[in-house]
Image 1: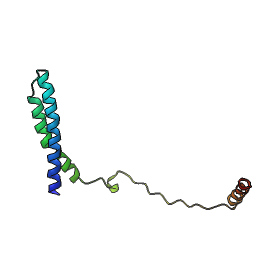
Image 2: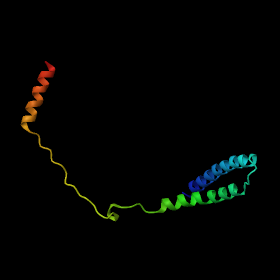
Image 3: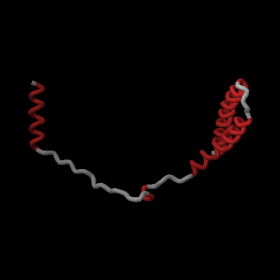
Length: 96
């Protein structure tokens, strides 16, 4: 469990760093400051895995936690003899 979480954090951090490197290159070409890019990268690489891990630990909403519930009785289907006779009549016409 912890190995998969650490691998996830490492991959997410690497992808965020690659995106920041591309944004840094564009910012340098336009003579813009790059400190905010790397500050956001550091913050994002730290917070993204933590937020995703805490979201997975949060319990799911159970039906009993909802404000109301509806319980429906199962449907009962009864075939009508007239319907069967009509189906046979249609089959005879189509198969003729």
